[in-house]
Length: 267
Image 1 (cartoon, one colour):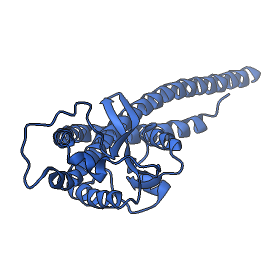
Image 2 (cartoon, helix red, strand yellow):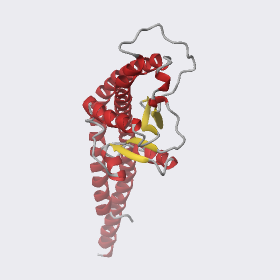
Image 3 (cartoon, rainbow, N blue to C red):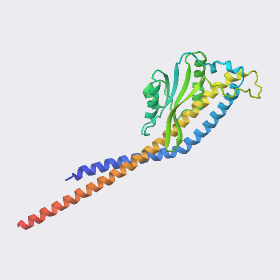
Image 4 (cartoon, rainbow, N blue to C red):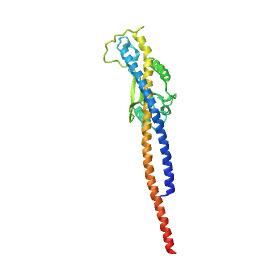
Protein backbone atom coordinates (compact mmCIF):
# COMPACT_ATOMS: atom_id res chain seq x y z
CA UNK A 1 0.00 0.00 0.00
CA UNK A 2 1.30 3.47 -0.87
CA UNK A 3 2.54 5.75 1.93
CA UNK A 4 0.00 8.59 2.22
CA UNK A 5 2.54 10.83 4.00
CA UNK A 6 5.02 10.55 1.12
CA UNK A 7 2.23 11.12 -1.40
CA UNK A 8 1.15 14.32 0.39
CA UNK A 9 4.76 15.52 0.34
CA UNK A 10 5.08 14.84 -3.40
CA UNK A 11 1.77 16.62 -4.09
CA UNK A 12 2.97 19.70 -2.17
CA UNK A 13 6.27 19.64 -4.07
CA UNK A 14 4.64 19.39 -7.50
CA UNK A 15 2.08 22.03 -6.54
CA UNK A 16 4.92 24.38 -5.58
CA UNK A 17 6.51 23.77 -8.98
CA UNK A 18 3.17 24.49 -10.64
CA UNK A 19 2.94 27.88 -8.91
CA UNK A 20 6.49 28.70 -10.03
CA UNK A 21 5.92 27.75 -13.67
CA UNK A 22 2.62 29.68 -13.71
CA UNK A 23 4.34 32.78 -12.34
CA UNK A 24 7.11 32.55 -14.94
CA UNK A 25 4.52 32.06 -17.69
CA UNK A 26 2.72 35.23 -16.57
CA UNK A 27 5.98 37.20 -16.53
CA UNK A 28 6.86 35.98 -20.03
CA UNK A 29 3.35 36.79 -21.28
CA UNK A 30 3.63 40.33 -19.91
CA UNK A 31 6.90 40.87 -21.82
CA UNK A 32 5.84 39.45 -25.17
CA UNK A 33 3.99 42.47 -26.55
CA UNK A 34 6.74 44.96 -25.72
CA UNK A 35 9.43 42.58 -27.00
CA UNK A 36 7.66 42.03 -30.33
CA UNK A 37 7.03 45.77 -30.80
CA UNK A 38 10.73 46.51 -30.21
CA UNK A 39 11.65 43.67 -32.58
CA UNK A 40 9.42 45.08 -35.32
CA UNK A 41 10.77 48.61 -34.86
CA UNK A 42 14.43 47.58 -35.00
CA UNK A 43 13.66 45.29 -37.95
CA UNK A 44 12.26 48.25 -39.90
CA UNK A 45 15.40 50.26 -39.18
CA UNK A 46 17.69 47.39 -40.22
CA UNK A 47 15.67 46.97 -43.43
CA UNK A 48 16.06 50.66 -44.29
CA UNK A 49 19.80 50.48 -43.60
CA UNK A 50 20.07 47.40 -45.85
CA UNK A 51 18.29 49.30 -48.64
CA UNK A 52 20.83 52.13 -48.30
CA UNK A 53 23.69 49.64 -48.51
CA UNK A 54 22.14 48.16 -51.65
CA UNK A 55 22.05 51.59 -53.31
CA UNK A 56 25.65 52.36 -52.36
CA UNK A 57 26.82 48.92 -53.52
CA UNK A 58 25.72 49.80 -57.06
CA UNK A 59 28.19 52.68 -57.22
CA UNK A 60 31.42 51.70 -59.05
CA UNK A 61 33.67 53.52 -56.55
CA UNK A 62 32.11 51.67 -53.59
CA UNK A 63 32.81 48.28 -55.12
CA UNK A 64 36.52 48.85 -54.38
CA UNK A 65 35.84 49.41 -50.69
CA UNK A 66 37.45 46.96 -48.21
CA UNK A 67 33.93 46.27 -46.94
CA UNK A 68 33.28 44.31 -50.16
CA UNK A 69 36.64 42.55 -50.32
CA UNK A 70 36.62 38.74 -50.45
CA UNK A 71 39.76 37.56 -48.65
CA UNK A 72 41.88 34.50 -49.17
CA UNK A 73 41.73 33.43 -45.50
CA UNK A 74 38.58 32.62 -43.54
CA UNK A 75 39.08 34.01 -40.04
CA UNK A 76 35.54 34.10 -38.71
CA UNK A 77 34.21 36.30 -35.95
CA UNK A 78 30.75 35.53 -34.54
CA UNK A 79 28.46 37.58 -32.31
CA UNK A 80 26.57 34.89 -30.36
CA UNK A 81 23.24 35.92 -28.85
CA UNK A 82 21.79 33.70 -26.12
CA UNK A 83 19.49 34.35 -23.18
CA UNK A 84 20.11 35.91 -19.79
CA UNK A 85 18.19 33.06 -18.14
CA UNK A 86 17.30 29.44 -18.66
CA UNK A 87 13.96 27.62 -18.48
CA UNK A 88 13.15 28.51 -22.08
CA UNK A 89 12.94 25.07 -23.63
CA UNK A 90 15.64 24.52 -26.24
CA UNK A 91 16.28 28.23 -26.87
CA UNK A 92 19.86 28.39 -25.56
CA UNK A 93 20.71 24.79 -26.48
CA UNK A 94 19.80 25.41 -30.13
CA UNK A 95 22.21 28.35 -30.33
CA UNK A 96 25.07 26.37 -28.82
CA UNK A 97 24.32 23.40 -31.07
CA UNK A 98 24.54 25.64 -34.14
CA UNK A 99 27.88 27.00 -32.91
CA UNK A 100 29.44 23.55 -33.34
CA UNK A 101 29.68 24.37 -37.05
CA UNK A 102 32.37 27.00 -36.32
CA UNK A 103 34.68 25.53 -33.67
CA UNK A 104 37.55 27.87 -34.62
CA UNK A 105 35.53 31.10 -34.69
CA UNK A 106 36.35 34.03 -32.46
CA UNK A 107 33.25 34.56 -30.32
CA UNK A 108 31.80 37.73 -28.82
CA UNK A 109 28.83 36.81 -26.62
CA UNK A 110 25.64 38.69 -25.80
CA UNK A 111 23.42 37.34 -23.03
CA UNK A 112 24.45 35.81 -19.71
CA UNK A 113 24.23 32.21 -20.92
CA UNK A 114 26.54 32.97 -23.86
CA UNK A 115 28.94 34.88 -21.61
CA UNK A 116 29.03 31.99 -19.13
CA UNK A 117 29.92 29.64 -21.98
CA UNK A 118 32.40 31.75 -23.96
CA UNK A 119 33.62 34.38 -21.50
CA UNK A 120 34.22 38.02 -22.35
CA UNK A 121 32.43 41.23 -21.49
CA UNK A 122 28.84 40.77 -20.35
CA UNK A 123 26.08 42.33 -22.43
CA UNK A 124 22.51 41.66 -21.28
CA UNK A 125 20.30 40.50 -24.15
CA UNK A 126 17.22 42.04 -22.54
CA UNK A 127 18.88 45.38 -21.72
CA UNK A 128 20.97 45.69 -24.91
CA UNK A 129 20.60 49.24 -26.24
CA UNK A 130 21.16 51.07 -29.51
CA UNK A 131 24.18 52.74 -27.84
CA UNK A 132 25.64 49.29 -27.10
CA UNK A 133 25.06 48.27 -30.71
CA UNK A 134 26.65 51.46 -32.08
CA UNK A 135 29.71 51.12 -29.83
CA UNK A 136 30.20 47.47 -30.78
CA UNK A 137 29.70 48.19 -34.49
CA UNK A 138 32.36 50.92 -34.49
CA UNK A 139 35.19 48.67 -33.33
CA UNK A 140 33.94 45.68 -35.32
CA UNK A 141 34.10 47.73 -38.51
CA UNK A 142 37.46 49.27 -37.61
CA UNK A 143 38.99 45.83 -36.99
CA UNK A 144 37.48 44.44 -40.21
CA UNK A 145 39.03 47.28 -42.22
CA UNK A 146 42.34 46.66 -40.44
CA UNK A 147 42.25 43.01 -41.51
CA UNK A 148 41.95 41.52 -38.01
CA UNK A 149 39.34 39.06 -39.27
CA UNK A 150 37.77 38.11 -42.60
CA UNK A 151 34.05 37.74 -42.06
CA UNK A 152 31.51 38.69 -39.42
CA UNK A 153 28.34 36.77 -38.58
CA UNK A 154 25.61 37.02 -35.96
CA UNK A 155 24.28 33.79 -34.45
CA UNK A 156 20.77 34.58 -33.27
CA UNK A 157 17.28 33.11 -32.98
CA UNK A 158 14.81 33.98 -35.71
CA UNK A 159 11.26 34.62 -34.54
CA UNK A 160 8.81 32.86 -36.85
CA UNK A 161 5.79 32.68 -34.58
CA UNK A 162 4.85 32.31 -30.94
CA UNK A 163 5.34 28.57 -31.29
CA UNK A 164 8.34 28.44 -33.64
CA UNK A 165 11.80 29.99 -33.34
CA UNK A 166 14.94 28.79 -35.13
CA UNK A 167 18.66 29.36 -34.51
CA UNK A 168 20.35 30.89 -37.57
CA UNK A 169 23.45 32.80 -38.61
CA UNK A 170 23.29 36.14 -40.44
CA UNK A 171 26.47 37.11 -42.29
CA UNK A 172 27.12 40.83 -42.08
CA UNK A 173 30.66 41.51 -43.35
CA UNK A 174 31.98 41.58 -45.99
CA UNK A 175 29.07 43.24 -47.72
CA UNK A 176 27.50 41.44 -50.66
CA UNK A 177 27.39 42.97 -54.09
CA UNK A 178 23.87 43.14 -55.56
CA UNK A 179 23.02 41.02 -58.58
CA UNK A 180 21.69 44.12 -60.33
CA UNK A 181 24.75 46.35 -60.74
CA UNK A 182 22.93 49.24 -62.43
CA UNK A 183 23.97 52.47 -60.65
CA UNK A 184 21.25 54.27 -58.71
CA UNK A 185 20.21 57.70 -59.98
CA UNK A 186 21.48 59.42 -56.84
CA UNK A 187 24.26 61.98 -56.31
CA UNK A 188 26.34 61.52 -53.15
CA UNK A 189 28.39 64.27 -51.50
CA UNK A 190 31.31 64.40 -50.98
CA UNK A 191 31.56 61.01 -52.74
CA UNK A 192 30.10 57.52 -52.67
CA UNK A 193 33.01 55.81 -50.87
CA UNK A 194 33.06 58.38 -48.08
CA UNK A 195 29.32 57.94 -47.56
CA UNK A 196 29.73 54.15 -47.55
CA UNK A 197 32.51 54.26 -44.95
CA UNK A 198 30.36 56.45 -42.71
CA UNK A 199 27.20 54.39 -43.25
CA UNK A 200 28.51 50.84 -42.72
CA UNK A 201 28.93 51.11 -38.92
CA UNK A 202 25.34 52.34 -38.69
CA UNK A 203 24.21 49.43 -40.86
CA UNK A 204 26.09 46.88 -38.73
CA UNK A 205 24.67 48.44 -35.56
CA UNK A 206 21.15 48.26 -36.99
CA UNK A 207 21.48 44.60 -37.97
CA UNK A 208 23.01 43.73 -34.59
CA UNK A 209 20.28 45.50 -32.62
CA UNK A 210 17.57 43.86 -34.75
CA UNK A 211 19.08 40.40 -34.15
CA UNK A 212 19.34 40.96 -30.40
CA UNK A 213 15.74 42.12 -30.13
CA UNK A 214 14.46 39.32 -32.35
CA UNK A 215 16.40 36.84 -30.21
CA UNK A 216 14.93 38.28 -27.01
CA UNK A 217 11.39 38.10 -28.41
CA UNK A 218 12.12 34.47 -29.34
CA UNK A 219 13.43 33.77 -25.83
CA UNK A 220 10.30 35.19 -24.20
CA UNK A 221 8.02 33.22 -26.52
CA UNK A 222 10.02 30.03 -25.95
CA UNK A 223 9.91 30.50 -22.17
CA UNK A 224 6.16 31.08 -22.21
CA UNK A 225 5.63 27.91 -24.25
CA UNK A 226 7.98 25.92 -22.01
CA UNK A 227 6.30 27.09 -18.81
CA UNK A 228 2.86 26.39 -20.26
CA UNK A 229 3.93 22.83 -21.11
CA UNK A 230 5.55 22.39 -17.69
CA UNK A 231 2.36 23.63 -16.02
CA UNK A 232 0.23 21.15 -17.94
CA UNK A 233 2.58 18.32 -16.98
CA UNK A 234 2.50 19.39 -13.33
CA UNK A 235 -1.31 19.48 -13.28
CA UNK A 236 -1.46 16.00 -14.83
CA UNK A 237 1.01 14.72 -12.26
CA UNK A 238 -1.01 16.25 -9.40
CA UNK A 239 -4.17 14.58 -10.72
CA UNK A 240 -2.39 11.20 -10.84
CA UNK A 241 -0.90 11.65 -7.37
CA UNK A 242 -4.25 12.73 -5.92
CA UNK A 243 -5.89 9.63 -7.39
CA UNK A 244 -3.16 7.44 -5.90
CA UNK A 245 -3.43 9.30 -2.57
CA UNK A 246 -7.20 8.87 -2.39
CA UNK A 247 -6.89 5.19 -3.18
CA UNK A 248 -4.24 4.75 -0.50
CA UNK A 249 -6.31 6.65 2.06
CA UNK A 250 -9.42 4.66 1.19
CA UNK A 251 -7.40 1.46 1.52
CA UNK A 252 -6.11 2.55 4.93
CA UNK A 253 -9.63 3.37 6.10
CA UNK A 254 -10.93 0.03 4.85
CA UNK A 255 -8.13 -1.81 6.66
CA UNK A 256 -8.87 0.03 9.90
CA UNK A 257 -12.58 -0.82 9.66
CA UNK A 258 -11.70 -4.46 8.96
CA UNK A 259 -9.43 -4.59 12.00
CA UNK A 260 -12.11 -3.02 14.22
CA UNK A 261 -14.74 -5.45 13.01
CA UNK A 262 -12.40 -8.37 13.47
CA UNK A 263 -11.57 -7.18 16.98
CA UNK A 264 -15.21 -6.77 17.91
CA UNK A 265 -16.01 -10.24 16.58
CA UNK A 266 -13.27 -11.78 18.70
CA UNK A 267 -14.84 -10.32 21.84
